[in-house]
Length: 107
Length: 417
Image 1 (tube, rainbow over the protein chains, first blue to last red):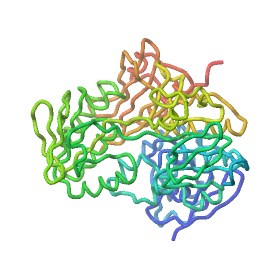
Image 2: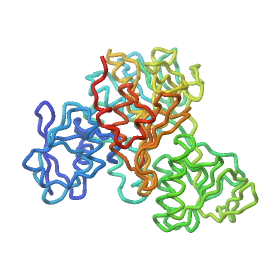
Image 3: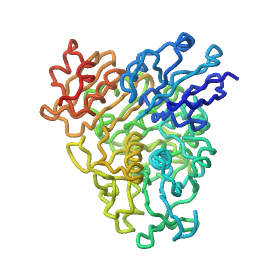
Image 4: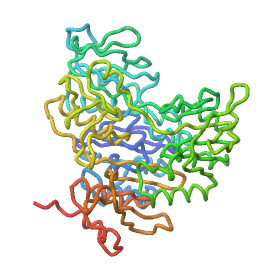
C-alpha cells in the first residue's frame, strides 16, 4: 500500500499507509494526527487541511482545481507555492512516498 | 472517572461536532484533567455534513465519517460515554445524572446537546416511510428507503430538503418539494439566490409547490402512500422526508434552572449564568458581533467547532469573547453554495459575477453595512468574503457589482491602524 509521510511543525514525522482512493487528509484524520483539522470533512470548504508538499513531488499530484486554489487564499498559515489542501489529494500509485509538512496552525 | 469529590474535570454532554471539539481542543491546549464526552448515539463521534451528501449518495462509508479512530480517545484520555443520555444536571452537587443511573461529577460542564428535528403535528406522521435526515440512524433508514423509492415528497425546502432532493433526482426518483413559504431556503438566502436554486432544481426534474400547507399524510397498511395538501391536491409518495428545521435541545438546561430562549442563554464567552456551565453549538443562544439582531442561535459546523475552541481556551485560563465569523455551506447536485456572515435583516443585494450561469456572489447589505455574502460556485469570492468580513471591512454595493473592482485586493488589504 502506498505511504505518505506527515511532518508536524515541530519536526515530528509520521508515516501512514494511505489506500488508493483515500485522501491524504482522510488518512491523517483517521489516524488522529493533530496537524490536520479538516473542519468541513473534506468538502474543500474550510482550508483547515492545509499542507506544504515537497517541491520535487508537486508534479505527482492531481491538478489543482479552482475551488482549492481559492480556498488556499484563506488558510491560517501563509500560503506558499507548494501549498495544497490535503482533502483534494486523493491517493494514486504515483503519489507513493509523498512527504507533506503540516503548517504551524490550521485555524 | 472517580467518584464525586475526586478530581472531576470537564464533562461534555453531546457527542456531535461541538462536543468532540471541546475534548480535542482541551487536550491540544494541554489540559490535564479528566474529560468525559457523553453522547446518546452508539457510534464514535462522526461528521454530520456528509450524511445529506456523499454518505446518503453511497459515495463514502462509515469509516470516513468518523471524527477520529477509537484509539484517539484512549490516547488522549477522553472517556467516551456512548448510547447514554444526560437526564438531569445537579448544579448544587456539580454532577450530571445519566439515563443508566450513573452520576458524572464535573468541575465544568459543557452543554453541546445540539438540536432535534422539528416534527409537524400532522395526521399520519407516524406512518412507515416518513423519514428524517439528521443523525446516522435516520440516514441509514433513508438510504434503504431511497433504494426502493418510486415517489419522494420533501416537506420543507431548506438545505437538508434540497440536498436530499438533488441526490434522489440523481437516482432518477421523482421528487416533489412542498414549501410553506414562497421560496427555497428563504430563512438563509436572498430572493435572487432562492430563485436561482429553485430553477436549477426544476431543471433537474424537481417539482415544487410553494405557499401551501400539508394537510395530512395518507397511508395503507401502516405505510405512507400519499401526501394531501390543504389546497386539496394529493401527491403520491412512498417516501416522505420531513425537513422543516430543528428545535434546540434546551430542556436539560431549563430543568436545571438555566435560562433558555430559543436555546440555552449564554454570554459572549459562552457561559451560562452558572460559572460552571457553558453551552455551545446548535443549542446555544449567544450574542454575535456579526448579527444585526441578538442573541442568535446558529445551526452550523463552523459555529459548533469555533464555540468549542473558545470554551476550551477559557477552561485553560485563556478567556476571550467569542467573535468568529459565521459561515455555512451546502452542496446540491452540481451547485455549491457558500455563505459568509449573517444576512438576516438585509435590505439590498448587489450581484457580482454571472448569475445566469450560476457563478456569482450576492452581497447582502443593511443600509451601507455589508452583512454577508452568498457565493454560488464562486469559491474564490467566498474565501475573500470571509477575510473581508472577519476583518470588519466592507465594500460598497457599487464596488461589489463592478466586475473590474479587485475583490482580492480589498480582502487581502492589511487592516487599517
